Amino acid sequence: MKYTSTRNGSIVTSFEDAICSGYAPDGGLFVPECLPPITTTHLQNWSALTYPELSQTILRLFIAPDEVPEHALQNICTSAFEGFENPAHAVPVIQVGSIFVAELFHGPTFCFKDLGMRTVVNLLSYFSQKRQRSITLLVSTTGDTGPAAVRAVSDIGNPLLTILVHYPEGQISEFQRKQLTTVDSSCVRVATFQGGGDDMDRPIKNLLSQQSYTDSNTLLTGVNSYNIGRPLMQMVHYVWTYLRVLEELGKIPGDPDVKLDIVLPTGAMGNLAGGYMAKKMGLPLGKLNAGVNANDITHRVVQTGEFYKSETMLKTLSDAINIQVPYNFERLLFYLTNGQHDLVRAWMTTMDATNRLNLDREWLTVLQRDFNSARLSDEEMCTTIRSTQEQFGYLVDPHTAIAIGAAQKLGCGLDRVTTVHPTVILATASPCKFEESVTAAITGAGWAAYLQNGFPAAARGITELPERSPIVYLAKAGGTLSSWQAEWEERARAIVADLGAANGYRCVTQSK
Ligand SMILES: *Cc1c(COP(=O)(O)O)cnc(C)c1O
Image 1 (cartoon, rainbow, N blue to C red):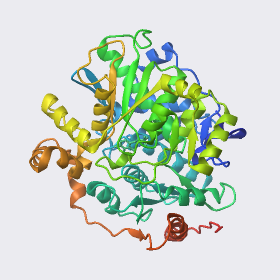
Image 2: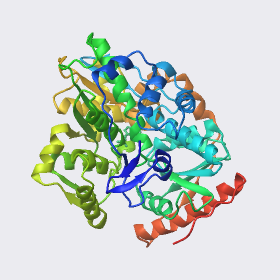
Image 3: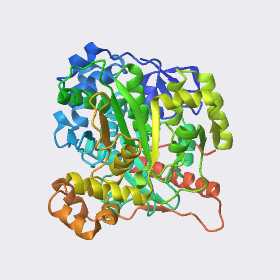
């Protein structure tokens, strides 16, 4: 399978180049050249596979054996799920009321990011060893991406694979901060910036675009969900969940009468992009419903066709989905138009220049055929955490609560009974990561009860480890966002060089 840019079909490259580059050279996002079909026969054959086996089988559709041979892919998919509660059954699908909940958070960092990230990082480690060249990951996090990436890198312990991770100061939970600052590995550097969730995206994109895989001895790679590896791997949990729900309903996979409606908390749309790709391949999914918080760009575009960056990032109790511009909307547009590169390029060129793009009626109708959305305030989110716990004895994290609340608003909530379009909530994180927000919903006494029985044993250790101070990128008074971003970019460049030196190689990145 070859890869191409959403904005230009004549850019054609290998899987290795696509995953190692992050963005496509024209600023677009990589997509596979085609989406292989998922047939009823596939689904039936896949229903007995373990989670790592299913991952390997689905990835194989997208990675040619001459790039990653079978035994290597098997090792990658096996080791990616080490550290999960139950690797063979990495994603439990349970019933709560009349809906299904796919618990995507049983990995080592208690968040769904582990599912995509660990495989991607393992693949990058494989390529670094195959080529004997170093790779440094540049990551910006709204809370969960960073810990998953840092943990994956430090678990592998390959000196050729290092990471510099950035988080917005004061905008991630204490638990998430500790997941970053307690890691003691020469492969890891942690920095914090005084800005909003995606303010480091521009400096990182600049750093990545100033180098190529062939002209420097260290490769800089981004592993946020613009990297195609993430949505590819995130298809797996949709297929897995589909198979488990059909099993539960006593139906045969491929049954033409059953389609799953999915509701998920949405930030950068990486998870949504994985689901949409799986649907385009033939997985029987109904609507993909995005739940968002007050940072509601996704809701606005799905409801009105207007896609534009809001003035400011709003602080919320569900910070992991505080996003002003979701990168994967570009992939959604690509698949929405059945792969019209020129149209996507025209839209995204407008977006890059003006921070705004408007879909006309016709395209909005197409968008609304596959997607719907709902927005929840912090107060509504807290009410949902409380009512889900009171009615079902089930404590959810703030992001999962956004999905449950969205399902209720969209008429496919916990009390809807249907076997034709069963509703599945994607539960993206464990409540253990979000003491501050969960306490806002169920009070300190509620949190104390959860600590007593419910808080995962594996999460306890982290709170006791010593923290190391992160590197701080300041937003100096009197400056503008772009002046700070220019300065942060230089800081990051210096840290990358230092990270290389600490691991025994020289890293050259060119300044503009
Ligand atoms: C990252 C994240 C999301 C959003 O996923 P996207 O792929 O960015 O849309 C939702 N919930 C949690 C807990 C997350 O960490």
